[in-house]
Length: 96
Image 1 (cartoon, helix red, strand yellow):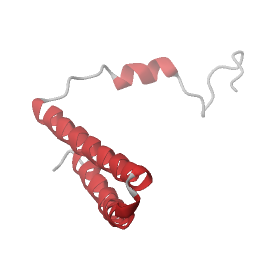
Image 2 (cartoon, helix red, strand yellow):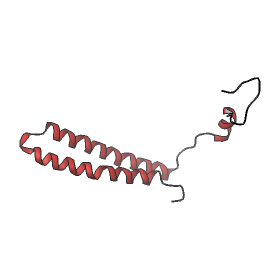
Image 3 (tube, rainbow, N blue to C red):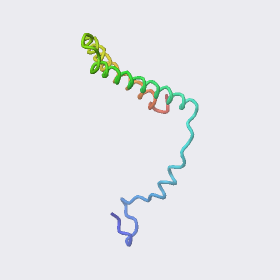
Image 4 (cartoon, rainbow, N blue to C red):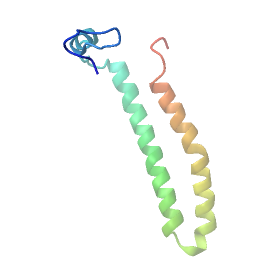
């Protein structure tokens, strides 16, 4: 912690200067807003699919347990890559 009587040192951070450098929040462009909207919808759909497949596995009828396991394994295999793809698309660099 810095000693106020000696002044700022080489490792000290001036929060007021940092705040001025950062600036204000900016409104999203329509293009970025649409990308965010699509990303949210796809990720929400994947989350709902995972929850429902887990519920089907837990509370499904006993004669359909094997089908529920197969469906859950499919969802467990496909959901993480899809989520990664969507997140990568939204958070890619500003150049692309």
